[in-house]
Image 1 (cartoon, rainbow, N blue to C red):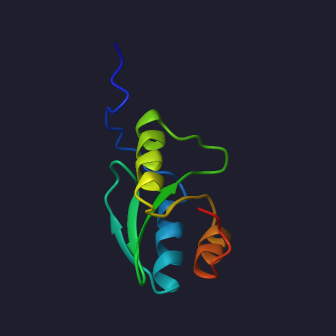
Image 2: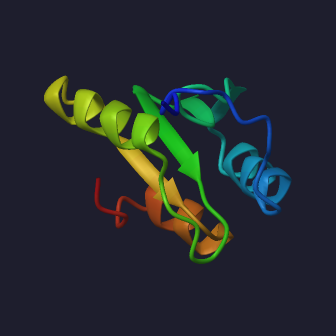
Image 3: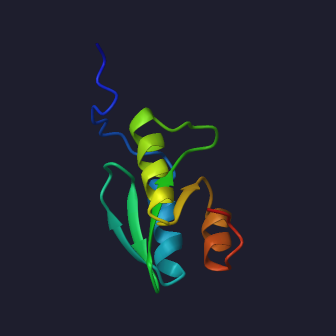
Length: 94
């Protein structure tokens, strides 16, 4: 049986670009990679899962997203620097 929570140490190609954009907008950023790519904060905490173009979430990421929503912790899937700008401007939906 395949462990759906098995760690994959692979970063998306746009990881550094997204982290740089978050820092540029003044967010604090922690690379935690598991169960989500980033834990971020400004006036409160939020989670960021980085995906490249059409990348999809793994089962553990889907489970974690559902847990975040249940706890009212914002969880964003970010694919571009424009998504980071939308978080900053409050336009990207949770």
